[in-house]
Image (cartoon, rainbow, N blue to C red):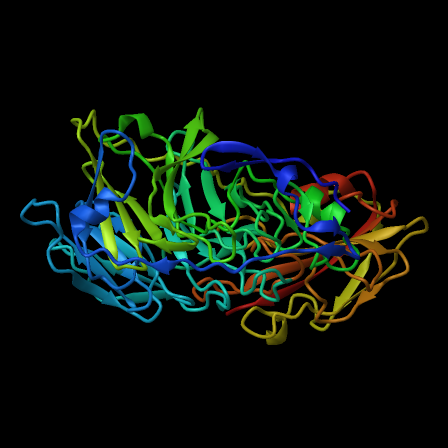
Length: 588
């Protein structure tokens, strides 16, 4: 079992040792014996009809002025400001997007104008004169007219993973021009059958070439790029029912190809007592494979939208992140119900402090709330907009002091496309030759069942001719004909025992398998583990798929499950006794 560590969390800006709140109590591991004490405490809404009275109850920093920008919006969730400086809000329960303009400059929006409508509309992001919108399963794009209205919606993604417990998809356009889409988990904590759940996805602006950018993220609704470095940061919802003081809300530096622990590891390397990794992978191994958060915040605070501040109205906040905390339903005392500022220094988070509070009210022994912050966005003038989805209000937070300077420069692109590489069989030397066969003949078509449009099942493979001294095998399936990521890798398997000379079709996709015992699977180019089938663009013509097998003189590569192609190739060099391949084609 991973050792329990005394990790720091930040509660209302105060550093608190997690050990003093240790929950669950007992032994967490592959066979847990723990006691968890949980709470259900749901504050009730407090309606304040007078704007001045309401904003007077909200605490803000000195020099900041809080005003009601719009009322009666039912359910405003995510906010976005267009290049023209117009504010928009998605309304999940209504199923639309509304435009909110202050034409007369009185500090309040005129009547909202519905500019798009689809059931479950939640995510919104602008890219010049285009807007991207997300529902549970779909992503749309539309042109933005000069008057701020949207043109016809074009659906560019139709198959985001199903929702379950976390249906609130959010999206943004990164500094690299790609779409980033957060897809939450279907459950509180469980192994997901769809590898795209509990991930950050990345796709081309036309919706194509979707991959898993990062995994193990339970529900990262809020994410943004740090302006100076162009690095992606997100704040993840912690697991429920681990007690009032666990799990922390995690601030993660989200990097390509990394795993952030969920559902097996949470916080600073702690084991979830409920769930175990796939057979063949220990909790210790999963913890070693997982990235720890850079900061933690009060458990159950429910982080929502996150935005780095790049405006001129609050110069002392420039480069810091703002996060709306919707608030708990299962903690005593309640947490969240606030907007916090994450202070960054030299591109790294160092502290968290509330900047808008007072929404949570204790009246004798009862708790109530004035609002539940969900959305946060920076206006063209540097003012901050905050959405409250419970009372249907959007607030505007401005400064009494004149704005200093203008908006910051866009975040730089910190991601570089990998240089083209040869297929694996051409990258390593071997004296011997393996004979490889499959359900398809060499240089002929791969059956539809083995493609992503079919069953996405791995094809059967058989091989022979391994020389004496062979102790294990490696499989790498490459497509060198892809337009980007040359080659695109569809399957990596390693530590296959020397006694195994065939794999059946339709192998499981977990990172470690019980049969064959000890076999591990790496991360393919889509970001998932195990096999993923051919899916070339229809306009490309046939692609060639190289199913390559290597006989090694070592029983194991010494790599954790889910290793990437580069790590596998580095580990097998100088250990290859023989190699062989069968090439199949597929034309979509």
